[in-house]
Length: 597
Image 1 (cartoon, helix red, strand yellow):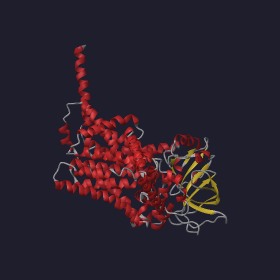
Image 2 (spheres, helix red, strand yellow):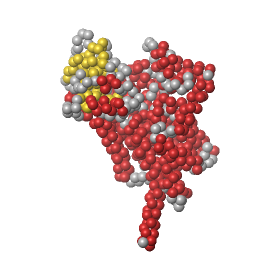
Image 3 (spheres, one colour):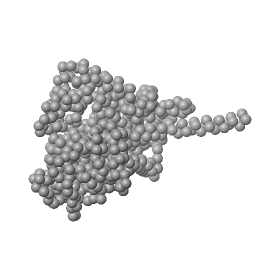
Image 4 (tube, helix red, strand yellow):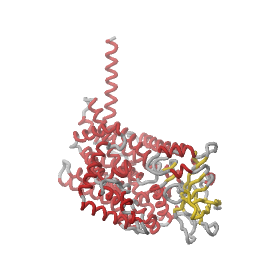
């Protein structure tokens, strides 16, 4: 018995050893173009499967009620993107007192996606998910070239998980932040591994754009420059590489302020939400909404967002100067909170994150590890300002850094289990692996998509204003193309036939999903009786003196309009009759007519 079992044990041990070695040795995951395409299609297919699944189940995710009806910030970005296509400069700057100018990079990217899809709402979300999924694919391949398939698997699983919670279903700036941040980090890993300054520049530009599109851990940028400067090369090489990084960092801010200026806005409007956060910290870490409690007078009257932000910033700095220990205590508390849970809710994995920190320490002399380590420190230091307000989504642009550190921790553990693996040999092999041209092409395409609304192509997708169909004297009119730039959600009873592609959902399923959601007041949706149609209207009517193309008008129709999805309709409503749905007015429509093409 012992004679037969001993060879079997050797076979099992050898098989385990080969498996471990295959997982930790750097390799080109999907080296052939066909294999690369299969991996990319699999990730895209998984994102589409997720989206279609939540649409069918009417699950509410973040700011997407039923998985697709956008509210709050998500709905505002949709309006901003539409106005960029239809009206250009002035109307973008005026919306919400300059709201669109906080993060115009995402608004212009979303405008391009809307143009590509003829503004079909479901296809807009699907195409946006394609860009995010491809960005995740690029990062997982770069992670495999650095630390083997095990790091790639971690990146894929946790980046995808983050996207299901904060990205795929919503038109929020986390989409641009995650997409640019993922491809930027991938390019930086390859650039530092291969000493390629072209990849270094492109990667830094993408990372800077990511942080301007979704404001977050900005301290990552100077620490990235520090990591590039303090490397074991000649002074000439150090200076040139550092100059490339600084140029890339500046480029992202130049693009941000270019769009603000292009739309005729005040530069103070850019990232104006940071002033709210600073004030909350200055009074002891009470959150960004504390300014509304302490100084409600700031929000009275027709004052622009940039002016309000400047006043809030002045108050915050006054507090900092007068009581610096208050903000210092709040920041220290936030730093400790981040270290206690660096993965923002994934508490079971925090040990691997610390193992990743140890792996970076062991390989500190290797530039890719040192850069990842310093960027991780930048995320931690930035958390002193960020973590109290936004949760994981404020780290969207640098989430890949956190996840990659966890992957390096798992890589370290598996490498130690298989002690015979030659580290130096794997490092030499890693230096021979280069990114595919398509991996470099994706960030270039995303960069082009930001600027596409500047071109004459914008006019090809601009709405043609529709003449008024006429309403009663005391009524106003909304002309809307339902299911496109004007999206809706139709609540139906249990026994009625439903089709999510017509934006029809089960009212009971929607209510059940609302109670599981958190972070926003959805009570108005839950209180609606089926059948009911909630419409986020984007005005397509020619100017009548009271409304213009692009006006944001939200309505409730006590009936099922799912059969009119994709059609242009005229809705009449009284401006003095509202329905409580969210914190903005929804008017009750009393007439619906189909507009002939």
